[in-house]
Length: 134
Image 1: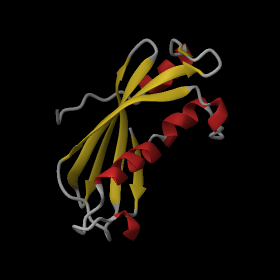
Image 2: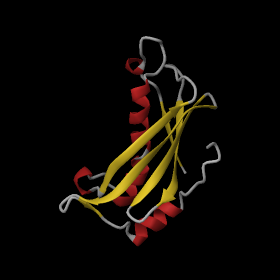
Image 3: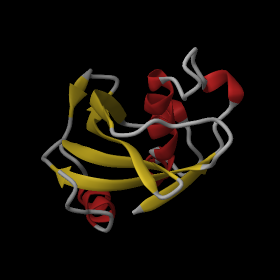
Image 4: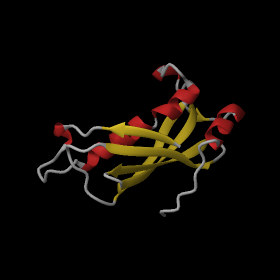
């Protein structure tokens, strides 16, 4: 599992004084960076053979400006050409949001998905975690 610590920024708040719900999707994408580095250590975007196929986020509690957020990132499921990333955001040890992202191993030239390479599959397996929170 990976851990990413984020400091909410003032401009991420909304009229109600809490972190805007659209911000969390960006935080979760930022927290996937260690997974991207498994494929391209220098984060060369043009050579990253992944596309995002789906995201879902459940908002469990409100998030606020002024207090650090911990985002955990793990692998929930590994398929033939895709894998499911599980994210959880905590503020003050309270689960505030959880979500999933389906990433597909993708050949940008042929515009088709491809099977996950054995080496990458092995690296993902190290971070496999069963979600006990549902």
